[in-house]
Image 1 (cartoon, rainbow, N blue to C red):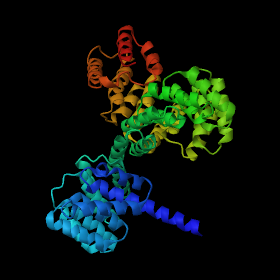
Image 2: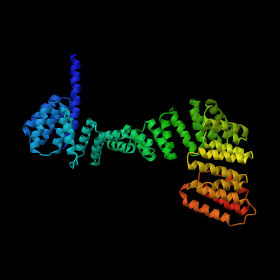
Image 3: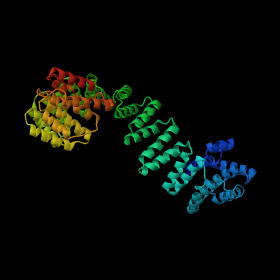
Image 4: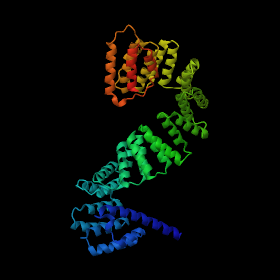
Length: 516
């Protein structure tokens, strides 16, 4: 029982020491650096009684005129609960040092411990009207308001402290937490980053910053934060994985690939990193490497659906449609209620000319909630079967499912290209005429597809509409130069161009080369 009592007292002493040091750091001109060595040793030992005794001795020598000694002694008295004695020390010092901010803040702290919250808040309100430039004072005022439960006042004081270049990382962190609770996520994350920049070497804090920026879709800032985490802890495979994910969202595929490779090197069994590496290799056009990476994942996790879909897509892009079908069927067997699985196999079977099977799969994918792409593919199958009205109706339905204008315009252009390829230039023009856009891909490709829709007509005079379309195309390429080359499969357009008369073919091929 005696040992328990001793431990409890020592624990209480350590709390009192921590609270006293925090207050003294804010109130003394030199912070804790101005404390005598003996006093510092007492604090290090959590020997509060010895520290209080030494502070009394310092105060007895200096008296009320020694402002710092009065603050030191009064603060230790306050934290020991001797509020009346502390009030007397502060009152005598205030008679000599009138309106001293540090003395008045010490009085606020004493009133708080005494339980006189109204008086503390009233005194604090007056102090906030003073032009205080010491960030430590604002930080302490914020701490008091936080204890009072006044979050708005706490935020205001913490912000003032940071405006005055406070280097207190904990203060910036506390401010961020309060702002997150208020729903001010952007401001909160900015202050969280401020805390990380002050702490500099705290990788965990930078990881919190990175996650917060990612939640706000601030991809570049998330990339910077995860980059700092990897520099601070270069052997953390999870940090490299997250860094790669952030880079991928920011479309920096080259660096994302490096990050995922590093994660895999650190942990060969980090299959999430292996899968992400495969995705990036696929996005970069390295289909053989992507397929091998997907296979590596599937060797250990045969049922990984993302890897099965990825392997199917990589094999399909390489031209190995039979292998692609095998992976796609395995995916469908494992996820028969997933729209994507039906859709992916449908696209592969369509390439193999098995239209009926493809149509059934597409219809099922639509029942399961497939997006506009399934309706576009079904429309292309109907067009191949000579069912133009059905195909156009499906395109109309696909437009209704599009999430944004860019998706809608992409579907329109792809179907218009298919119409032109089948000699239905007039229908392609009518379809495109119903859409207008400022999007780069649309403005560059639309005049090219319209040119091809006219160019096969032998009775069309040279110049005129064709020259106008060429001029419009050239202007679009200049206006949207940053978007070139356009990410578009040109094979269908090239097939149309090859069938044109020689002069028109040359013009069409030149336009296609310009945007490839």
